[in-house]
Structure formats: structure tokens, C-alpha cells
Image (cartoon, rainbow, N blue to C red; front, top):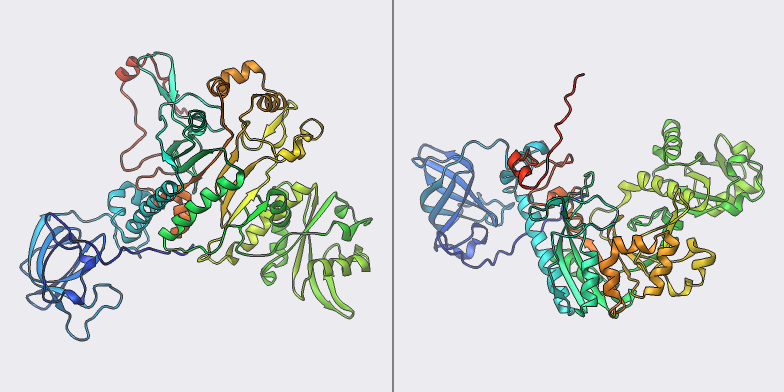
Length: 595
């Protein structure tokens, strides 16, 4: 995505200490003023025998300093400059700089700190190996792009807090040393020195803690929470991540969605991206049916089309399926025969039995279909398919036949593969996805599996289906999606013991198991639990999308690599044996590779 930087205001307050102005705040209105600035030397340019131009940079911008050649300076030296703001000579203005009309003259320069040559250029246009950037992260963070990303993130946090407080939420911190919770992801373990053999875990999220706060009567809780999961890393995942976490009592699903919509609208505006109107909603079933995914990118069309009825009673075996979904491929001219063969392989790798493609060509009697199977189609099937898909000459139709959900999922992924470049990177489309299934399927032991977590309240209209058709029961859960990325999810919680027992029974969770896993929460519910619901969304991911970054490492000050290493500090490191002894633990020696 294309970056959309948000520049700091030029009406900066006067600095204190060693300087009285930030360099980026200087303008032509300041001509004649004597000022003192501090910063790093960005560039030194010799001009004649005794004249040197020095670009001095701080986070707010850059200014040209006119100095005498006797001053010995190099890039990244830290300097203090006292000088007079002067108009640049005619014809030497730099329109690409906010300070391009002025310069500092009659200067006195003090070197506050010298610098060794940088291992890489700090100019944003330079291409730098990521491992080198992370090894010298303290230098990487000086670059304008990184300064903007981290400062926009701070503005987003501030806007979120203001939104929450405006809506009557109370900020409460929950423990980082917590008890193991079965939420799916692997947890980081913290051995206890005072209770040898026992351990805390670092929380995956404050989920159970915030529900206890509802029982405690805090009504509306929020937290910008640090969460930790010991999962394999990727572009949008880190061991440590930050989320807006909230919970509220006596609310409906619509209320919680309204709270979050206000927060993300404020966050978007803080990043310089105004949102107009309310955030729309789509049901899970509709999202799957139209887009093939439960986190649809609404910035481009090419929706899936149900063509099952077109081939009712067909003699073609590949089209004799419970559901047939079609996609009119974008950029059909790029779909050569070899590319189409690759799409067939891609569909099979996603679990499809196959993929049919048909190219639309002109014929003597209207549009015709060209394909390895076209000769087996009846005239009515061809005409009805052309009509159902509303295609034009040159278009390519892709068809997957399978059970409804599998056909949708496979074609939905192909829609993403083919349409990724269709989306406008400067457009931001939020959408709520609601009415998820309460259960996502049945495991190998015949037990139902929760789509979200076992405390999600079923849709009241579907209670009578819990016994007869549990897989059709909808939940009171909701996800927020931005440009095809799931930002977060939430639900109305189960607060009644009878309903919770019924759900546990369907999940195959015994009373003993429930007590061992969730005992402290279930006990709290016995003492008057209000109806409540909540939500959490990832601030790392939201910020990355709003500033145009594809990787959340670009909006985190000190991230880990994909292997979980910190190249700057060298973590993780070996712990001394005496520390393990103090914890009553020992570490197995690593096996040597004898190959």
C-alpha cells in the first residue's frame, strides 16, 4: 500500500533546554529572528573555499545551515546551532522542504556528540536489508518514515483513549502474570521462584479478567492492553502485540459495535483519514456467499455468483455438485492458457476437486464459451451462464463445484489472488461481519467446536435449534474488517449458568473440566453477573493499514524477526545456570547435529 504520512504541525511550541525552536517550525515569518536549534547532521555540502551548507534534522523536519568551512562535521553528528533566520538567495528555494524558503546564517555550531559512519543510509529512499535495519533499529527509527509511523501510532492511541473516555469507559489495567487459559494459542510461561514447580503465564488477552470486572460492577472497562502469544510469526503477527480491549454491561451487540465504530473513526481521523457515514454490516453467510471469505475486501467488486441452477440436471460430472459458484476474473487478457492451468492447480491446493474455466468469445449467434468442456454444454446452459454472469467478449469465467462453504472459500481465495491489485491503496473500507455460526464444525471425537470461544451467547432466535440443528445456530458475535484484514472480534457473553452448562454439554466439556479450566470465572457468575459483551482490535494492524504499511514491524518500535529474534539485543539468550537453580528448574542440553 502507498504510504499516507501525517506530518507534525508546524505551529510547534517553543522547545526548552538547549534549544528554543524545532527546525521544522521555522518559516519565512521568522526571518531576522535569532534562534537556537538542535539535531543531527543530515548532509554536509561544501560550497566554495570557505562556505559549507549543513542540513540539520530533528523529528519535525530539516533546515539548511550556512557555516564556515572551519567547522568539522559529518553525517549524524549531534549539533546545537545558534543562527539568524534569513531568506534564501533568489533562485535557491527548495520547494520540497517546508523550510525551503529560509536558512540559518551567522551561525555558531556546537558539536554535542560525534558519530561513527552509519552502517546504512538514513535517507528514506534507500533500500536497506531488513536484518540490518533491525540490528541497528535505533538508527532505523531516525528515518523520516519510521518517525512518522511511530508518531502516528501515538496519535491513534491518544484518539482511542479520548473516544473511550468520551463514551464513559474506565481504563483499568489487568495482570501480566496470569493463570493459564485455554484460548487456543500457546502461552509464554513464567516460572515462579516463590512457588517452585508452579508458573504464571503471560496473558493472551484480558478476556476473563475483563468479564470479572463486569461482575465487579465497573460497567464499562477499557484498556490499551499488551498481549503475548507464543505463535509462529508472520507479517501481521508478533509475540507481543497491542489491542484496544473493552467490555460493557447491559449492552446489545449494536451498542458494542457503536463503541468500536467511534474509536476506529477517531483513530482514522488522527491518521489524517476522515471517514464519512456509518460503518456498514454484512452477515457471515452473505460475506461467504458474495466474497468467499469472512473478512471481505470491499474496495473492489468481482463478487461470486451462484450458478447452481444453471446446471441443474447437467450431464457434465464436474458440474454435478451441491453448489456451483462462479467468478468473472478481472484482467482476463492476462489469463493465458498456462496461467489458467496454474489456477486449476491453485484451486486443487485449496481443497477443490477442480476448477472449470470458460473464455467468452463472439459467435454467430451472440456470445459463446470456449473451454475444454464447452463442447459438452447444452445451448441453454451456455446462454444461461452468460446471462447469469453478465459477461462481455473476452471475459473469463471460473467455476468451482463442491459443498457450499468449500466452493465459496476456494473461489474467494482466487478472487483475492486475482483482484489484489484492483484495490485502491488510498481507500479505506471498514465493514462489520455479524451472525457468525456459534459452532464451526465437529472434531474427530464428534464434539462441536466453538467458532469463537465457549462463552459466546447464541442468537436468541436460534435457541430452539441447539438440540436439533446446532451447526445452524448463529452467535451474537461480530468482527471488524478493514480492506480485507480482520482488525478484531467480539461477542455478547453468556452470563447465565443454565445456558453456559448447555453449551459446555454440546462442546463435550464435563463439569469437572469446566471447573478446572474456568472455575474462578464460573464461581464469579454465581454472585450476580450482568449481561455483558465486549470487543478487542489490534492497534498494530490498524496503524499499519492506516499509514500504508504491509508489515506490522514497521509500526512497532522494537519488533522481533520472523524467527522470534531481537537482532539488536541478541534476545533470546542463554540464562545462567544459577538462575535456573533458583527457580528449581534445569534445562535439557541441546542435541548436537552429527550430520
